[in-house]
Image (cartoon, rainbow, N blue to C red; front, side, top):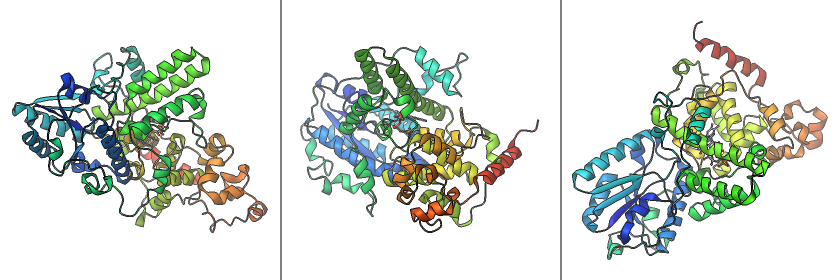
Length: 494
Ligand code: FAD
C-alpha cells in the first residue's frame, strides 16, 4: 500500500526525512500539498509569502514530475482532505515534517490522533531545525531566555546529523494520475495550483520576480554563491546594506527549500577544503550564529505561544503608544515617506523586493516603535504581509527585540539614530541613493540627512525638500526624548 507524504514548509527533495521515510523500501509515495491557510489561525500567510509559495510549489511539482511523481494538491480542511485521499488510494501510512507554530502544533497533534485511531501509521519528522525546541534545556530543565547561553548549549550537543540524500527510488502508485483534479498538469497556468489563488490579482510582484528564484534549485544556487563570494567577509559584510554581504537564504529557509543541516554541512565542508584560515573561520562562526538565532526564535516561540501577539516582558503591555488617527504615521512609514532616508530606503526595498537587510530592519523597527511610538505589533503585521521570508518565530523575535520587550532584546533606552546608522553602515550613501533616486543627486555626505544640507547644496542638486523628497516627519532628538519619557512610565517602581 502506498504512503502519503504530506508536504508543508519543506518544499525540497534532499534532506527530507518525511519523504525518505515514506519511500522506504521502495514503497509507492503520493506527495500531497494541502492548502488550508485558515488553520494557521490569526497568522495565515500574507501576500508576499503566498507569491513565494505559488512559485515554490510550481518548482517542486516540476522536480517531482522529473522523478515520475505527480504532486497532488487539495484545498480545504486538512484532515478531511487526508481522509478522502486515504480512502481513494488505500494509503496505509502518512509522513510529514514538523512545524512549530502554536496553532499548527495543535492541528497536527489532533490530526495525528485521528489518523492513528483509524489504524494508520503516522510519523512526523524534523526537517527544519538543528535542535528542536524541547531538546535544548537549561541545567534545571527550563527554556532559554538569552541567545548566547542557548547557542552555547546547542554547540555542546552532538554535531547536527548529516543531511539525507534525495531518495534514490521514488515511485508513484499505479493510477494516481486519475485522482480527480489532483494532478499537477503540465500547463501550470491552468490547474489546481492556480485554483489556490496565491498570486496577487493586481500584479505588484515584478520586483520579486526580478530578485528571487523560489524552489530547491534556487536555494542551492544561493547557498553556493554565498559561500563562494561572501562567507569569508561575512562578519563585516553582514552589516552593510549596499552590498550582497548576507546569504539571502531566509525565504528559502522559511519554506524549507533548504534545511539548516544542509547549510551546516556545506559550511563545514568549505572550512575543511580551505583549512582554518582566520577570516573564513570568523565569517563561518558568525554566519552559523545567525542560523542559531533562527533556532533561538523557534525555541522562544515554542515555549511562549503568545509571543507573536503579547510582549514577553509584561510591563510593556501598558506602554503609552502614540495615537495615530487615520493611521497617518503608520502609512508614511509603510510607504517609505518618513523623510528619514535610511528608514525610507529600507521600507522601499521591502515593498519592492519582499526583503530587507537585517541592519535596516532594526533601524526601521526602532524608528516605528521609538520615534513614532507606534506599537511593535503594527510593524510586525506589515512585515508579515510584505516579507517573502515572513516567519512567525523570527518576525516576533525581531519585533520584540526592537521594542525591548522580548527575549534577549535591545534595551528600550537604546534608540537607534537612523542618521548615525546610515553614516556608519552606508557610508557611501549608495543604499539610500539606490532606493531613493532623488537623493542620488546629493553627495554621500548629505544623503542621510538632506534637511541638514545647506540651501545652496540642495539647489545645486535640484532637490526641493517637500517636493522631491519629504521633510522629516519627526524631529529625531525630540521624539527620542519622548520615547525615553514614555519608557519611564512603565518602569517598575523601585
Ligand atoms: P543571513 O545573514 O545570511 O543569515 C542566515 C540565516 O540566518 C537567515 O536566512 C535567517 O534564516 C537566519 N537569521 C539571520 N538573522 C536572524 C535573526 N536575527 N533572527 C532569526 N533568524 C535569523 N527573519 C526571518 O527569517 N523572517 C522574518 O520574518 C524576520 N523578521 C524580522 C523582523 C525584524 C524587526 C528584525 C530586526 C529581523 C527579522 N528577521 C526575520 C531576521 C533577519 O533580519 C533575517 O533573517 C535576515 O535579514 C535574512 O537575510 P539573510 O538570509 O541574508 O540572512
